[in-house]
Image (cartoon, rainbow, N blue to C red):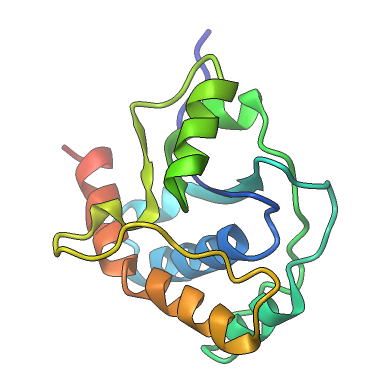
Length: 161
């Protein structure tokens, strides 16, 4: 029996900076917008994550600056079971996409960079702020905030073609 694909999964390296911020942003936007998207789950995972790590302090601070709380986040290593539940997987860089294809036997139809859904010509990758200053985390967050309307539009298209 096939598992229902009802999850939007964000992937980065350690699951402490980029993917938790993306998860928080999309979850908040889907709750606000509704329109059927609220039935989807939103999760994040890392390709080289240690289970149980908190989101980085600067990620928590950058999200709090826009009214979102990700302080309860705990990192997890992405598993085949999580991949099997994913309707779509968004990576942050081309190397994340390559690792997904190399590591997992079965992937959903939609595996792409978070910013691939944007219609304009913009850089597609989301830079890793890890080890940088607070401003790097704000820039990272803002590059994802910029993509949220396009993410919502894309998700609407794939759940109600």
